[in-house]
Length: 190
Image (cartoon, rainbow, N blue to C red; front, side, top):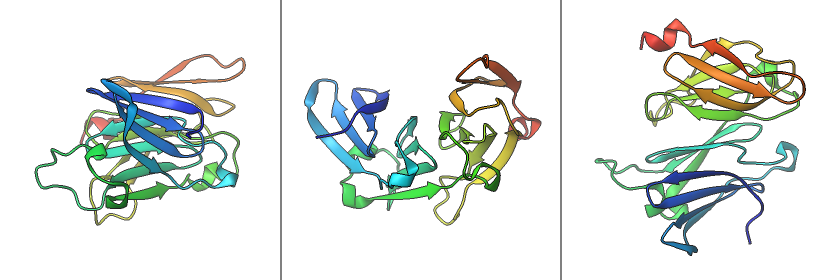
């Protein structure tokens, strides 16, 4: 039995449900009772709830909690036509990317949002800083490249994050309103 669903993503006819205790279910819209694949991301009690946001870009799935996790095939097919749920769980690997030093020990969690290219994300860390993360696709790269976009977008952590062509928008709890910021020139120059 899976735990509560925190985030959901639709990719064609496949529903990806990301759950509180780290389970990720892949089900067909045409047969919702059939699980195509279930992945168990590591659950650490000190991380609290898992999978607060997810993003899928074949064959990579990104989830967020106190860290950003990347789920990908151990060996990607040369033509990259297989979907993640066409692999078995033992054919997958999970990489965790931890928060920047400034965000360690902060209340809250990470939120991810896709940006332009496959495998490129914006991440709001628990300290309300926002970074772009790239280089997830390179199998030999230990850590993705990080580019700071905003040091602190809100007094408390970010709850929602959206990205457009030239801006990103964040929101938080409490009296903080929605805030938008331009994307950095470094993102446009790539």
